[in-house]
Image (cartoon, rainbow, N blue to C red; front, side, top):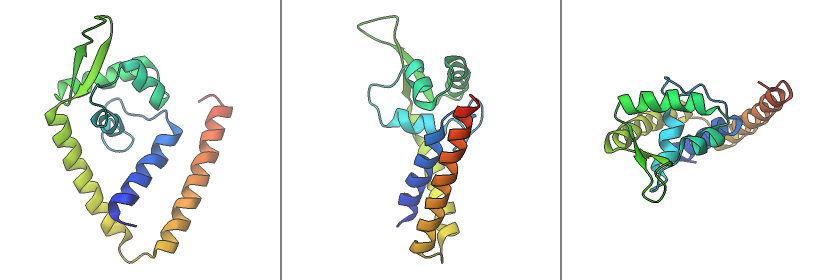
Length: 144
């Protein structure tokens, strides 16, 4: 597997549990997952859609979007058909930040996995995914 494939796998693992602490933080537990999702959607997303996807409140999303807007990584655009709907769109600066972030993380992951066999990496991911499932289960059980 390549560094990029491991990067995607790590991203998916971290997204599964939701409730990310992403208000003002960068990185996998920061606003980067939101930027990744926005970069995949030409039509953008509403704050409600982001909240549902990441299993957080709309208030947390609003705080995070304010931070991203201050950094000029996103813009909010009113829907042409329904002015009550505001779509969040990633900006060119947000795309550049995301590209730089991904490039650095790919370098980090490539360095980290260099010399580790695919078999050992598969075991690592299998165990990590199982542990994450258990933590998520515990979170749901405790309503955290």
